[in-house]
Length: 371
Image (cartoon, rainbow, N blue to C red; front, side, top):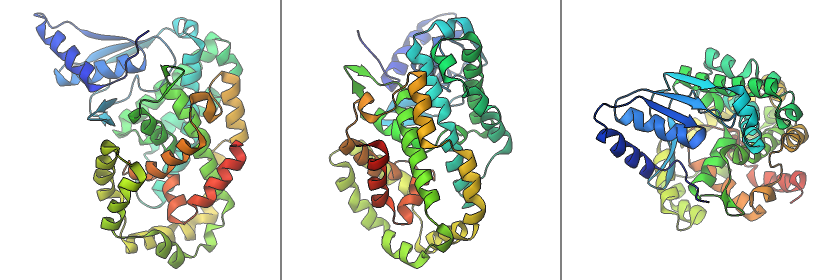
């Protein structure tokens, strides 16, 4: 069969077809992720609002502002209003193919390490926590994740709980006007693979399945960081080891991305705002060092242990090893080396790099993933 992604060319076609209609009908998106994002952005471009009828508990974008669209070879969140209304019949969602709910569950479990990433960004003053948005996502998150076996079995009540968690994540993104409440390192890994049109066995890998593997990596990053005593961090050594001028950094991009021109262009844009001066880096690491003994136990409470995340993904029917989505160890590490430059947002992966521990982490990740 033919598969299509949320690519901008389809929005062009939708817009053209819609504008040919004399009476400008109401825009109703019936489906899940790709359908919703395409209709959402098209509605924005024609100055209309739309309604979404979700058919599966497969992702958190139903109620969010913005649409994740691949444009000019880059995965981007394009600005557009959330739907006027969202309706999901939980019996229909429960009857959807099981891998769709598994994908939604994987998208939801990602909010645990994403929350920890946000806590780190809040600490250094990069993106302050928005209390309402935080509560929308985190307050009932553990409950929504508590029964992966029930989700896998298609239990209507468990699917309803999953739908609620996903919808609340969308509301959180609306409240803040940003995907920060629901997106951390794991989503950047997924977006990187989106830009490469990741397929396995001839089919595109779903958003949630990419994010689920990203969640394992993000969780591993945070657990590795928690094994470091950053209250004793040698800031001078870290700055000397990691920092280089922006021009020197820019010269590294062709080595990181090879001939991927879209990746290089994206990195140049994003790093103009993200890359710190030596003084800013010193200040950032100083804040982390002084606050580490206070924030470390909170980060530990926020995340689920790696082994538990892996088991939940296995039970729900989502991929729990990189091979299950066609990613080799070499490709995984190539991705991780490229991800920090692809988004101006601050993540746990950035901290890992800035304290000079990235390559030690690769060894650690190989061990716990058995690769």
